[in-house]
Length: 602
Ligand SMILES: *[C@@H]1O[C@H](CO)[C@@H](O)[C@H](O)[C@H]1NC(C)=O
Ligand SMILES: *[C@@H]1O[C@H](CO)[C@@H](O)[C@H](O)[C@H]1NC(C)=O
Ligand SMILES: *[C@@H]1O[C@H](CO)[C@@H](O)[C@H](O)[C@H]1NC(C)=O
Ligand SMILES: *[C@@H]1O[C@H](CO)[C@@H](O)[C@H](O)[C@H]1NC(C)=O
Ligand SMILES: *[C@@H]1O[C@H](CO)[C@@H](O)[C@H](O)[C@H]1NC(C)=O
Ligand SMILES: *[C@@H]1O[C@H](CO)[C@@H](O)[C@H](O)[C@H]1NC(C)=O
Image (cartoon, rainbow, N blue to C red; front, side, top):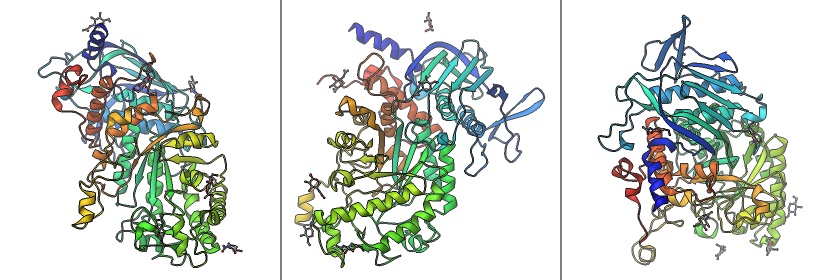
């Protein structure tokens, strides 16, 4: 009871812990500080400012002020120069632009997070934050902008003293971006509409992530997504300190990726003319990611999940075959032929075109490898077998060829778990293995010496639990499948995701091989209309565990009761910034004392 009273007192103290993901170490006070556009920002001693791109002072997009008679304009519209050459200063300027945009233009009055009619707003006119001093203690390297697992140090230290001096120190520009994201979370808009404040001063935060790989997989083959939808998703990842967007770029359903040297792929493979990503679309997406500390990793799934038969016939088996259940997990099937030199030549042409365009922005290339069924080779006129022991050496040769080509082009291969666990492929120890079947696979892959990413469908599949999309005829098919649950039912509630950590069940000596996780958005029944609400704020639950771990500073499991109001607040912050996540509780619960919505021990 005593313990509970203390917790309640902490919770009642308001937004003290409303940072998401929760920092590793933080202490905050209850002092009020205001912030406005006159805050002076230095980066390694240099005053950093910029002018709006269209020289449009006075437009509502821009917040202006004057310092030392020079016009200084912070704008949420700062667009760094494009191209694969990044400077730390441009990265930081972009981050500052978004920070001030989030605070001044997208700030919100937190009525939904406060007791009704409570008088929690500070009186106007208090102390202002005058300076934000940003110090980067080490030089960025090329690795900073396309890091291999763990190559970039994302830590930061953020302090705001009671007199209104703020400082942010980090060894990398990525760490500065992470710290700025935390900085935005300190502030709310005042109901006067022209003031912004924190009630947490003084603030002292020392923060760094537990896992280096914190990602989201988005399938852009089963439904079409505009570049703007994907960029918004990158924005949202950065808001949650996630650092990887894995694009499952092609599948049998559609091939939306334009490959100039193989033009028929997108011409025949896109859902409709124009629904494809040009090389410059792809580059703009990857650049956008780099500027937000989010690496965009492209996957071309193979040897299964290949739907190129209409574009380049003769290289694959089983495309659109029936009954599809014999050859693949869902229609339409399709897979590369094994042991075929024409397939190798095709992959060389594909990779020679695509990978040099990816490598300026990404350290990894994902070669897929899930759900490949031996039965495909029954339909291969040259093979006519489904004997896995006969096919295994051919698959091994296929993978050797594919991975050596990836390495030659300067990237590190990633694969799905089945290539290793079902097909016994011998792969280089540089390869990152991604698991989705869960259930002990992480331990096995880690034991085999691979770096492992957890995408277990038991926890991390955001598409699950929304009903089956396959059609059923009346009669037995209907009766046998009623009430039409999908294969990975139930829904992965944020609470479930929050209870899981990638190293769960992995022996201590192998935990170091587990580099993080990816939540997955397979898009059979998801398109831009539902994208945000499917992902957010749920993915944030995984993001907090990946950033901060499941166990808190005192050695206890993190409390979901502490997490819930913070995640509700995070969702409000994301909404205000244009990401339409779904509520995780009723509005009444987010307005009252946190313990009023406990389920109790029933
Ligand atoms: C703010 O914190 C100080 C020091 O912990 C405490 O004495 C004071 O009562 C608090 N004020 C409010 C309004 O909670
Ligand atoms: C990251 O940098 C911080 C600050 O310099 C340092 O304390 C920390 O040990 C570094 N983390 C790693 C994993 O090297
Ligand atoms: C493979 O195909 C045969 C028909 O050729 C079918 O009977 C069998 O069920 C299929 N195997 C799988 C695993 O689907
Ligand atoms: C696999 O390809 C090699 C080289 O083209 C060829 O010599 C061999 O006969 C093929 N194996 C089968 C089972 O077709
Ligand atoms: C992989 O190895 C296991 C264990 O040795 C064996 O049972 C299985 O048949 C092998 N699979 C293939 C495709 O070689
Ligand atoms: C955390 O929760 C799990 C599952 O309820 C439990 O097995 C474990 O002992 C808990 N750990 C701590 C440190 O309380």
